[in-house]
Image (cartoon, rainbow, N blue to C red; front, top):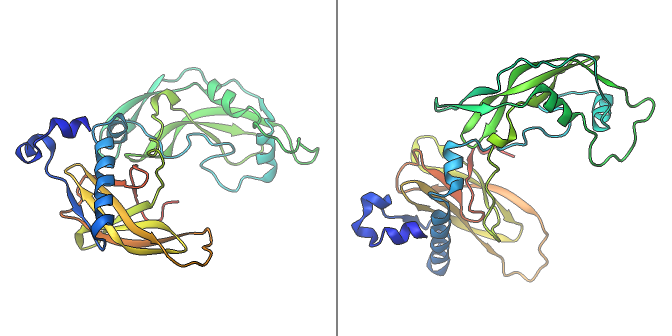
Length: 296
């Protein structure tokens, strides 16, 4: 809000304020369009220049849990291994490495390089070797066995972030009798910024987007809607740095009971100019929309 107040009168200070915002109403008109424009302006003002905005564009915001319970980044783990790990049946059969750098380079898709602090192999082991908070069944005699760690080395694994997928340092633990390595991301959590929170009362609507081949001024949106909603088109509110998108959904006036089912579909919206490097925000949640229609 302060940014827009500082930029009044808007028409006289285009160079310092980033241009005049434009709304593409799509198939909606009247009060619905006005409501969308007010909401989109609020979303844009809240995001642009904020700490979340800076972290999303230039920081380290992970879009997935660094180290979920279980064996991450691998597949086809035997059932006994998962059960043993869940119950914390870990044992050390070797000394863990101590001579390693305390920081490492991370290269971003745009070529920029950042240095991040690392945790020790011992710290990583201490984190994943704890039993889960909720254990429904203690290890049965035939369903569990000790997981003996026989070594560890520093490697890399892919991680999805707000700036694209990167390769991050990770400890690779060798476990006796298990073909796969136990992987634990070695980046110190202090270097990672938490994902931004949605606006109070906001509900995610646009889940993902992609560019339309041969049509640089169009976006294809994947969105969620209710079983009794009628779709009246997609809309976009644009500034020089942001594009806020929305799908005009309206609940049917039918008196029949409406099942509580979330459906998904795709729809296109036309922009005033190509997206280029602008960030796409969902007007409902007030959060960035990631590119790639097959997400989630």
